[in-house]
Image 1 (cartoon, helix red, strand yellow):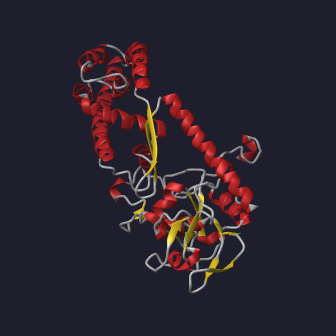
Image 2: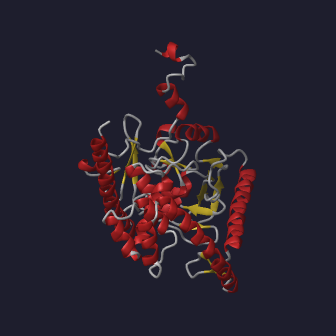
Amino acid sequence: MDTRSLDSLGHEIAELSVHLDAATARLLDLIREFDTRGGWNNGFRSCAAWLSWRVGLDIGAARERVRVAHALETLPRLAQALARGELSYAKVRALTRVATPEIEERLLAVGRAGTADHVERIVRGWRRMDRKAEAQEDARRHARRELYMYQGDDGMVVIRGRLAPEVGAVLAQALIAARETLYQRTRAQGGAISAPDVSAETPTMAQQQADAPVLEDPDAPGESALEDGTRVSAETSRRLACDASRVVMHHGRDGRVVEVAARTRTIPPALRGALHHRDRGCRFPGCGSRFGQGHHIRHWAQGGPTKLSNLAMLCRRHHRAVHEEGYQVDRQPDGQLRFRRPDGQLLPEVPLHARTAMPGWMGERLNVAWAMDVLHPLAAGGSPAQSS
């Protein structure tokens, strides 16, 4: 065996690894700036979600990249060591879990002296020591607890407070349980209702009222308000009316109600079931949320039909984005959905030279069973010999 050629090969591997670490340092700088400037805030939940979609990172790895990128902003010595290839990304990632500007220099020495495994073990020991300090911090947090709830001048209910983490978790669960109770109550009052993934955000007609002209044209004269008189925007009414129980009331010239129609569902239960089966969650590119609300691509108040081809499933965040934040969606002749940003640009819209790692996914749900039927040689139930 040619020892020299193996030495040369090993040297090339090490040299290339240094270049990769230096490039990673530049990548983290770009991620930090992109996140700080909100470049991902065009329909995505976070910078990590955008990275997962745009460059194919696992969501956990994407969150770590964002965390390390921000941590290095206050750790210039570690950042410089990574940029020079003196420390690997694995070492820097571990060190940033505990590093502060005050102890950065000591940890840099640890990184230079030890292997990645050594660094991980030292960081774990460091964190055990930190837990002792955390116990003291818990006592201080307990003394700073507070909670306020009041109604603001605009009618919105304001809740402000500082709760211990475990109390906050209990409060979050209580809010979820209250929402579920409201949903079940609405279901009992309205009779048959849609699939269980419908959000309880949508008020019933007893809670939210809007004049028909306002639903058809936001600029038309009319009223859009909640039961207690709090006004909401016309687009908010249109969003809530997309998928809700509906009671049509006719008023006389003096404003009195002269006729009340029966309660109906904007999207009937059977149609909602078909919509849920087809979309399997939010169709906004990059979202993937399994829970959603039915959205009329052309609103029913404007004559849009309530049929499957005019409906799309959107989560609450992206349903609001389409109605109140200027995003647009339409269905192409081939049945595919096309989303646009408020500035009219298509989503996704990226420079041609940067498309190498961008997936062709446009928001459709992944059908794993179908993919296996198409791709796996044993999917038909035969042996490898039968598949050949």
